[in-house]
Every structure is written in structure tokens, then in C-alpha cells.
Image 1 (cartoon, helix red, strand yellow):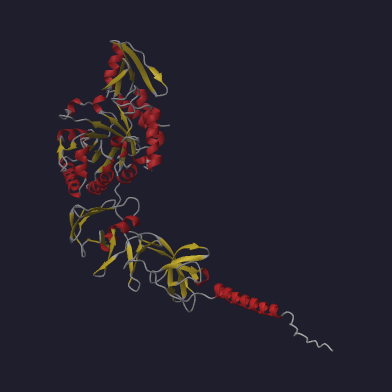
Image 2 (cartoon, rainbow, N blue to C red; image 1 turned 90 degrees about the vertical axis):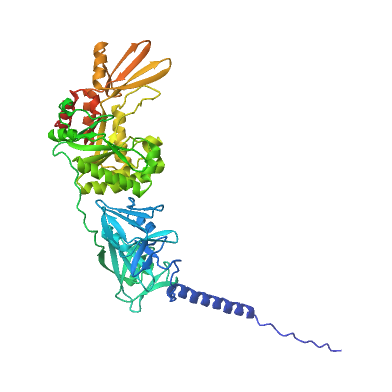
Length: 572
């Protein structure tokens, strides 16, 4: 029987590979299209940024944390924005308890109150068109007085609601949009990121920076974002007008010489000027006449017209000292409110006018660090008003240390930018209750104290007056205990003469030194004399300081004044 065979159909070779190849080609084409899209096809979608506020404020290319308000067509700026725009001195000060807002410049003090159209500019009436106001726990100030005092400018963009805040005197690079269909400002440095604003050809943008080959710009509607460099042509530099120039106060100084001040310590009564004698070379006296009496801002005065006449007859200026009485509670209360601060200021202005003073010397000591900002604010409010009367403003500061009540409460940097002169009280290196005996002001310690304030706090050397002690301490060491008492220069001379002592130079201190035994105790004195004083005056000259001061006249020996005068005016 014949067997029959059936051939199975033959499968065509390569069919599966063909489909795979087609699939891969499709994927490659899709990727190519996607690549072309990603590289060359820009996003044309406009997405207006949501800033979370109705009137966002931009400043130097940044969105500020709080927005503005618009009232009757006038821009109102929050204090937080002003403090950032006006820099580290923060000349805008708000006091929530009284609703007081104080704006200060070099020679102006504007005091406003929220919801009040009447204000005070240098203690004279000043009318506002729009009152400052509080809203949502923020305080807003109308732009008009801010423009007058600080030269701040604002541009309100009604289409976007954005407020552009411009600082007086700043220079801003401008550019012109080049694309005929409009140049896109994008939210990121990518052509695929959304458009925040489209700028017509020829329109101007402000250029704030550059990032990854893109320019960071601000458009005509105020929107911030990135624009391709190829779409912008650099244009002119925009110059924001400077603030109205204030007449600079030029503090008194001695032509061709230095300030040589001595304090007149007045405790119970003033000295008889006829008994003072000649103070050769002294050109300023600072009697301790005014003291804060209570937390309400009342100042007790002990000024003596006869003393002023005597000083003027000697060719001296009178810079009366104003002290806080070194009482921290009283100081806290008096500095806490604008009402009490301005009460003190008004009294000082009246005293200065009544007694024909040339300056006020501020001496606040034993103050809490919590009062640091209020002390600076008081000095900022006081200084322009004293300057308006032609008065020199100076403040006494201690060397820097970690002591709260003695040193840390002093913002030397801010105070130094405000006052005319800063007296560095370079004494009490070893204080009355010091656990060890030592110099009141060794030369190295004195130099370090002054240099730190210049270098760390940025106080100009030509504002600093080096304050030197005319007193020293007799240190008594007995049974492991150390005590001291302050004495003047003549008293030390008497001890040296009566005990036939021979001073020896303590090179480390830069002073002469004696010691002697009495009643079983060791007495030690680091002497203030011509040697120590000459060394400090020399230091003052080397550092380029404004002059010297001495605490205080009653500790003097009469021969020290010619020594100081000669050392000040010594030619190299």
C-alpha cells in the first residue's frame, strides 16, 4: 500500500524580527519627536504666578514676605518691608503699646501714630494725607513721608497688583525685548516652563541677575522671571533719584589738634570755678549735671550758669553729661515708650538752650541687654534734635566684655553710626572689688579695648575719644583677701614721698609701680603719672583717634595738664 505524505506549511523566516524592527523604529521616531519638542518647541502657556497676596512687593528682584495695601490711590508699605529696604540701622521703629511709629534720619525725626493724620517732624506739626494703619497684625505706612525722608520710590502695576519698591540712589541695568511676537519671561530657566509675562518688542525690562545663561528680569507688569539672553538687548542704566540731600551736621573739632576733655564730677554741689585753676590744653569740660530721676522720664538737673561762664571764658566748650543714675529698673521704664523718651529729649533740649551748652554726653551704665534696642532708639531720636540746635552728641561706652550690665547692652556699632563721638572708658581693667590686684588700665589692655571697637564694631577711629583715668587704686592684700580704694594722683604722690618709696617700671602694664607693707598687709599701687598718661596719649595719636578724655578733674595733679597738652600736640 502506497504511503501518502502531507507537507506542513513552511513558516517564513524573519517575520517576528520585522515587527520588532518596526516597533523599535516607531519608538525611536517618537523619541526623536519628543527630543525635538523638548529641545526646540517652547511652552506657550501663560501662567500668572500666585503670590498668595493681593499686592506683592518686589525689592531688588525679590518678593517680600508681606504685601502692600492701596488706599485712595496711595501705596502703603508694611514696616517689615521698610526695615529690609532701609538697611541695618532700621530707622523705622514701631511701638505697639502706644501705636507710635518713629522714622529717623541724620537730622530728622518724624513721629506718627496709627490712624492719626497729624504727626510731628522735629517736634513741629506735620500733616499726612493718609494715616498709618494696622491691618492683619501688620503696620502700614503711606509712601509719601517715606519718599520725603528716605527717597524710596514705588511703582504700582494695576494689571498684576504688584508694587515695585526702589531704593534711593540705586542703579539698575535695563534691557529691551527683541522678539516681534513678544519675549517670554518664564518661571524657570527652561523654554518649557510656564510664561509669567510676555513682553512686547521694544518694551523695557529691569535686569536683576543672570543664571544658567538666562537673565533674571522684571517685566513691565512687574512679574519676575527668566528671559533668554538672545531675546534681550542691553539698554541704559536706570538711576533711581537720590533722597533729598540733608544738610550734614559737622561736629565741633579742634583745628590742627585733638579734643582734650575732662569730666567734672558733680555729686552734691558744683565746684567754685575760682578754685579750679588753669587746665592747660583742656578744650571741653563735661560736668555731670543731668540724671534720670524716675521711670517717667523726669530729669534732675544741677547745672550752674557760673560754671558755664567760667568755661566759656577759658575758651572751653561745655558738653553736659546725662546719666541714667546706673539704675536698671528706672532705665527700662524710661526707655520703653516713645512718650518717656521724648520727654527726656525735650528736657535736654531745654537745658541746653537755657544754660548755653555746646553738647550732651550720654552716660548710661548698668543697663539690661533687653533694653539694648531701646537705648539705640533713644540715641537715634535724640541726636537729630540736638544737631538741629547745633549741639555735639557723644556717648560713653565700656570696653567689650561678657558682662551684661557693664558691656553687652551696648550696641557700639549702631551707636557709633549715630553719635558724633564715642568715649571709650578704658579703665576698670581691675575694678573696685576685683579678686586680684592690678592696673586700672594697663597700656596693652587699653590698646586692645580700643582696637576691638574699631575692628569688630566698625566704629571710625576719628569718632573715638580715649578716656583715661586720673585715679588709681591702693590694693591691700592680707590673709588671702584683696581690697582696694580709689585715690587721686596727689594722694599717691604723698604716699610715695612719706614712705620714701622708689617707683619701678612695670613694663607689662606700661606704668610705674610701688608696693609697701603697712599693719601687716601688703599695699600695691600701679601709678597714674606723666609716664602712663603720655603713653596713652601716644596710643591715641597712633590709632588716629579724635582725642582724649580724663576721669575726672578732681583726681588730678595740676602738673598733668601740661603733660597731656604737650603729648597731644607733639610733632613727630
